Image (tube, rainbow, N blue to C red):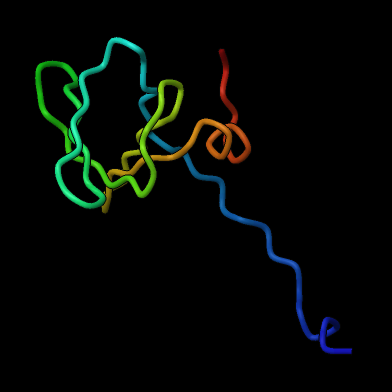
Length: 81
């Protein structure tokens, strides 16, 4: 059976920097898959392939800034309320 050829690998621990969208945030769609949000008096552009909702997260990495639904983010990360 082919599955016997596969070995388990544990993912590396990673810290994600993210911002949770609130009802007070000003956002605007700026193209097919780009949104802007105002954070600390700065406009931040991020990728989103579905409409961001209150409670969703905007994730910042060294290479990208992108939208992640609240359900997916909570599934993959420890979130302390």
